[in-house]
Every structure is written in structure tokens, then in C-alpha cells.
Image (cartoon, rainbow, N blue to C red):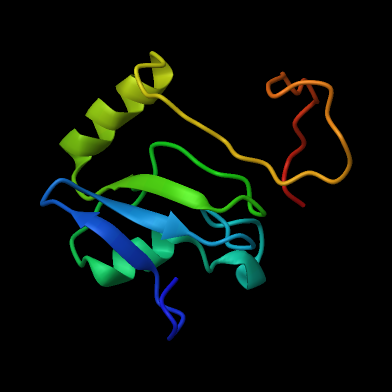
Amino acid sequence: MNDDGRMLVIHEDPAFVVVVKAGGLLSIPGKGPEKTDCVAERVRALYPGCVSHPCPHRLDMDTSGLMVVARTAEAHRHLSVQFQDRQTTKRYLALLEGHLSGDRGTIELPFRVDI
């Protein structure tokens, strides 16, 4: 986010934008009126005419990082297929406490629905 609290847009295209999602911000609206502030709503406010459900992928609320957000229905379809078919490359960096036995690994934990 910018110093004034606005979402930082690092790439802007007529079909999609790439934004920096801050940790603690939802990707899409949660349940209840207190959980409406999210990437999707902020992008829709920045780009009038944007599709109503612009996020073809999500990041967990506490995860910060780049998100590709569709501005058009056609872009959303294309991006969704790319994420579905795993044509995208994702890289996660975690800050950990303690010592690890190697420089790579796999975390296999169950997902939970946001509360």
C-alpha cells in the first residue's frame, strides 16, 4: 500500500492490473459487513466498469504479495484458466524463527475457511 493507505498498482493494463496486497487485507469480501474491505473492492473503486468479481486467484488474508486482478470478463476467463491449468508460476517466501535442516521443503497443512 502507499503511505496514504491506498493500494499500490505496479502494472496497469486495459484488461488487468497487478497490485500489491498488504498482509491483513482480504483478497475478496468475507462474511459480514465488517469484512467488505478487500483487494477486489479496492480495485473496483479504482477502476469503474471493472467486472464484479475481478480476482482470478487469492492470497490468504495474512499473506502479502502481488495479485493479478482482471478488469474485463475476457481477461478474468483467460487468467482463471491459466491459474486452473497451473500455467502460472508462484513463489512464496516465508520468514521463520529457528534453524532449518535444508534450504527447501514442502509444507503440507490443511486449509481452513476464513472466519
